[in-house]
Image (cartoon, rainbow, N blue to C red; front, side, top):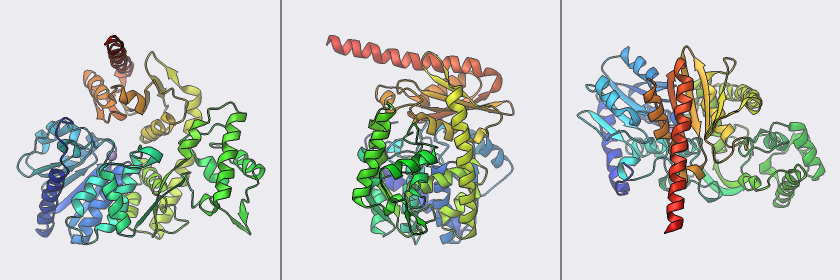
Length: 486
Ligand SMILES: [Mn+2]
């Protein structure tokens, strides 16, 4: 699929086709089910689609799901209508076609597609089908925006939400943590619509909404040993660096700092790492491209697009997707307050999970494994994997596999470094192959993927993953040796 020639115009045409299909059904009064993944990108996608449907006066219901089976179950209880499935589905086209081939169906996804396979009343929108890398240069929310901007009267409202989705999927992998490729076009739409400002600065979590020491302590990506999770140490670091932490009775935020103070802060973090014998290059990851939603309240936690993405993710992973979707659609006041509360709770739980992880990581030949117990909600497995994989507890040359269990099913979340992807490791393929061997289902991106398997096959599954990764790495070694001989 990735082999096709890059053709943005053809993708836009497919988006338009999907938009016309959706608009026709909306005008006909068809009830539309919008379903998608319960992470930040998934909820952004659902928010963009349902927000657009609301603008059209369509009849719709929205639902986020944790995995594809949940969607299939949900569908079994419904008949007729139209389905818009976002941020999932491309990897299971054959199965979906088999079960729902007679429905009206739109898939808006950016995961590696199993096949193009569109039929009557089915439209499959996926950048990979047009030679565009959905893994790095556009998210499902981005694609949802490219579809909906054809039919909503307010496209500029949704452009920044697409940016939130892409950041939620960690696509800011350009230089200085910049979004690139197709994402750049969406960013310009948002900037032109006066919704977004883009500039370089500290990109600490809570940069505009939290006291500086709390923002510093909340930073998990990159993980700062001795500072991440340690508010008191962060406060003393600021005091030692002679940075004013308060302005009268108000705590100052990173956004309030002058250029000179920012330099002081940067240097103080570097010396802290040096003092603790830690590598200092992670500090570079603290500076990057800020995406600021200029119309959001300063204290809302929605002004910084990365923080916005974390809020959506927290809602999705705690069974509060409706809150996240409502926020993405544009609802505020008590809905936002509730979402913020969910977010704070979620961060506390996540912090505990990371402490657990740092003590319980297992090492296999080619992978690192973390088994989380019943005390950790299985919905958090993928968040733990994402945070942990950037935490320096994981060596760059070993993929991380996090597993959690619920009702006899093991939920697996895998992450690797861009270094291993560059040498040819493809976690999406590894998860798919290993899971299908043991009566499960898997897939995803090269850098981040997942699987679900029956609990009693876990050990065999992990051995198979370890073997497949080993195989991929040995291919690399052979290749390097061959190249050396050239
Ligand atoms: Mn996604």
